[in-house]
Every structure is written in C-alpha cells, then in structure tokens.
Image 1 (spheres, rainbow over the protein chains, first blue to last red):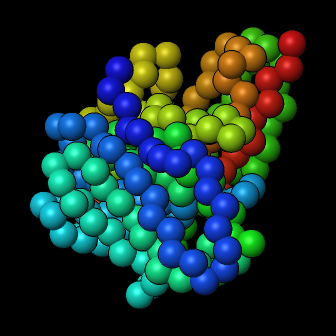
Image 2 (image 1 turned 180 degrees about the vertical axis):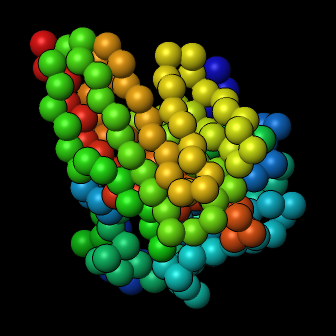
Length: 111
Length: 111
C-alpha cells in the first residue's frame, strides 16, 4: 500500500534555530498537508497545499512557517526560528479524493 | 471551531460494542474518522460525505446526520486491536481544504 514518508523521525534543535521537516507524499496525490500534535492533545491543522500554492492555513501557521514543494516529489515544512512551544509531532498528509494518508510523523523537540 | 466528541474515554471487554459521537456547530461537507495508536500516525477509517456517500474499511460502520451535523462511529464485537484514540475530523462546507479534528475518544479494549 502506498505510504507517505517523513524524515527525520525525530529532531532535536535549539531554540531559535531553523528546522526543515521533509515529506514524500503519495505520488499521484494532489493535495498535501501539514498537521501537528502536541503530546497528548488533538491533531491541529497547519497548512494545505494544492497546485503548487498554499490553499489554506491556520492561525498557527505564522510568518515563522513556510512550505515548499521544491521538486516533483518532496514537500517540506520550514520553521525559521524555533520556539519551545513548537515542540510537537508534525504529520504530513496527502490525499487524492477521499481519506487522508498520514506519514508516521517527525517528533520535533526544541530545547 | 473544533467538533465535539463524546465520550472522552471508553473501556470495553473484548466482544462488546461501543459508539463514539462527533458533533459540529458548522454545516459540514464531510466527516472523517481516524484511529491513532500511541506514538503512531492517525490511520484513516472512514469518510462520510454530504449526500450519503461513504468510503472506508468494510468492518467499520458509521452514520452522518446532515441535519444535525452529527456523526457516530459504531464499533461492534470489539477486538484488542481496536484500542487507541479515535478522532473525528470535519470538513466544513465552503471552508476550504482542511480537516478540523475533535479532541479524541480514548478506547481501551481489555481481554
């Protein structure tokens, strides 16, 4: 079964540093997403991406965040200057028509 | 505004049934159901669309009351593998391409 692949699985970074989280969505999917989940809490929407541009973004997705699809396969989330409260599990997802397929996540720890 | 799930937690014996509810204050286009096991990504279970279409796993059943903007997930003859946190995600009509998740229902199935 096709998978969404995320790397790295775990990243530890110092406050103020930039991080790039990487995702390879399912190849024939058209819609791409980033969600995050703070430990023990619900999954929160960050941003959706379609046709090479952002289609929706949440209040969480401020100027510190950006997304790119630099080539035909990768989909990245960049956090420019990380804060302690950015510590969370970040999930990439893609979809074609119906259900979303989530990647296994990147656990980001900001120290 | 996030959908409201109930109950927050359920403990079952293997073989027992459970119903998990999800309600929204917004007019919905679709309701999605996901199961998440500890430390893993959410796994798609089912989508229910406005107009009655449903897609999902054969062993899962759910309903969507479009008038009340409510959905219920029915877990019958529960197995140990059903344990996890169940999230509903809603797509509001006209609100764009994003899922808003409920707070989750923790299900524990005991032998």
